[in-house]
Length: 125
Image 1 (cartoon, one colour):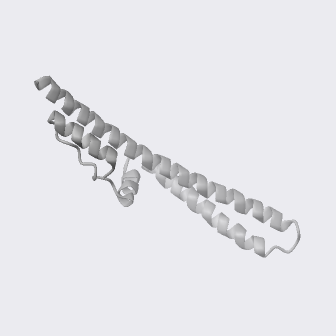
Image 2 (cartoon, helix red, strand yellow):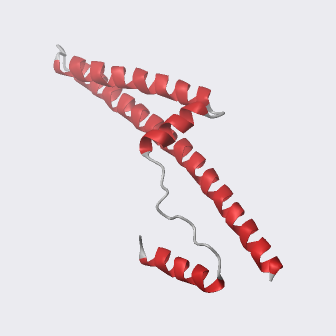
Image 3 (cartoon, helix red, strand yellow):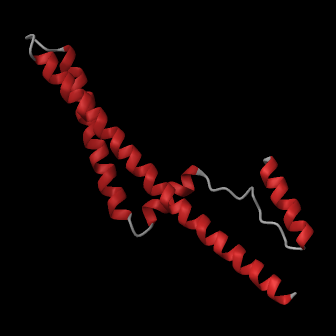
């Protein structure tokens, strides 16, 4: 727990509100499985397919680079190698953005529930 978590917990205890559980973090495996089970599943499947295609192209271009016979071939295969590496990276970034989107939406909903709970307690006073 961080110092900020402790300060929030102390402030909530002073007002008589039960403090939230700060240690309830999701694991990476659960976040990824939630992403593949959600509404955007087809986007994840499509991105995974293209990521695999780019990775195979990445490895294939790397192998062909070292087996090049003429002086122009290494330039061609290194360009393919770099572009496929960029493609793999872009797909990874897209995966992480969508996974973090799900996490952010879940945290916003938790905050909405906490605000509603706080509003009820303040209205009761």
